Length: 151
Picture 1 (tube, rainbow, N blue to C red):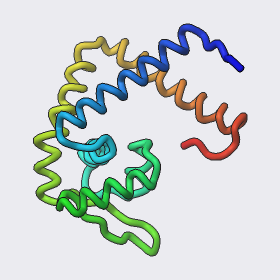
Picture 2: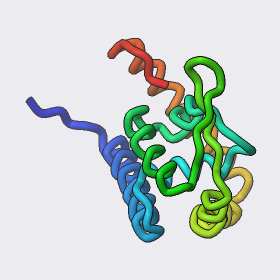
Picture 3: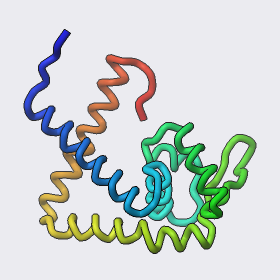
């Protein structure tokens, strides 16, 4: 069976895939796995220690993938995990992790800010509003039609 998707939706999906591909190349060029990069990126944006559940949510990665990457980052001395209650954990960047983020992740954040700063405020607002709308609609319609929880 064949489904013909609209040209606009195909273009959107290709752009999303290409964007993810660029971040994959960035992570590789920094000597990091995609998941380690996503975790360090997320921790760089949060102030102080972060609950594991928040990191899982913000990276969009499966919990198992995050846990595997965390084990590697922890064994490399980049992060520490501490209990925060009976079933919760908090992630902390070690000094080595902070240095890694400063040297490798922060330049990527600055690059993103540079790109956004070149757009007008109207362009940024419109892009963010439409992206949020798409995300909200995708979550809601996938819940309605496919069941389960989608973020």
